[in-house]
Length: 428
Image 1 (tube, rainbow, N blue to C red):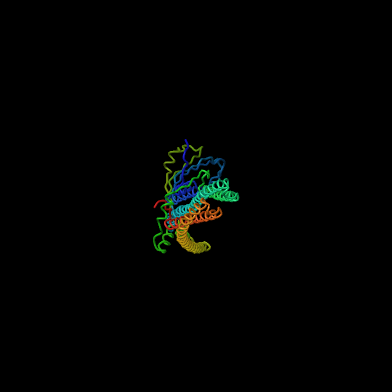
Image 2 (image 1 turned 90 degrees about the vertical axis):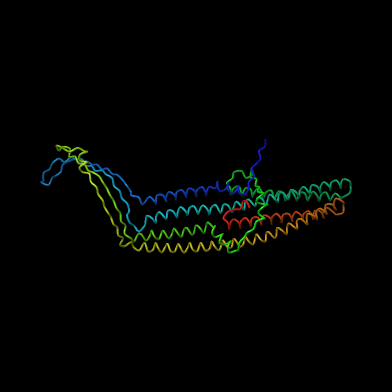
């Protein structure tokens, strides 16, 4: 039993591409790495606790304070636990944790940028496939019409009603239609290959795109809101602008980290431990556990480091931060300008393409009706094959223009929805 092939909607293609895109998977890994950095940064405020054990032996002779040289073989050891933590550093650890959080958000925003770029490629590729498929279907109808004309011409010539030249003209016209069909078919396969490559889909020839809801319902929708409102929504959903805004937050935190170098750093430490000594040959040497118990001791220490002169490093680091803020501000402003220009172009393309589609639809209907009368006249022998071929070519040209205008309108409207809402409208 034959198994029906899957028909891919636009939503299916976008979802599949996002799921199987390797750069996006890599970005997920980077996000996970930054999340671990964030966890480690938060844990830096906890004390560092360690344990130690040292043991060493001395063998040989040595001279005591009285000048007597004697054998001095012994064993020394010490062991214990120590802990250290930063008590004050101008909120350095807190800001370090904030910076790690911002960096994790930055990687997530970078992923959104990659998703947007991939989605735009999928939408463009998907509609290109729909366009070329529609042209193939239209050209297939033209071939069927030419086959009927050839059959009529051959029968008419066989009974001597028309000249043989009519048959040759019909055959030549059919060959031209097949040639154009092959060109459209080639473009369809190329469009499928491009779409499959963007999706990371293995077999492009098995890709069957079909989305009746998309094509039937989208023309019932429109873009509502003033130009200013649309621009604000597009800016709000632009992941590149969100990334720049996040970078500015990160630079503010980084400047605080640099300033911390000019403030004192206070560290506290505590330790507890014990020592053991064994002179080997000394009589009545106390045992290990007895000495360890008696020699048990604790220590608490405070260390203060006060910066005096760091060669002006902090000042210049802060200047670098300010320059980077200016750079990001310029990049952000440029992105806003480009976003506005994209919206203006898409709105213009949508309005003009929609008007062109309406006009071309009327022209196609009129041309189609004209061909019906021309065909009747040809069957009745009132017009030549050249006349009907001219009418048919006008219909083919009109239909191709209507199809292109339709998908240009569809593309512009989808892109407007995407830039304004941040998502493709798969249902309406």
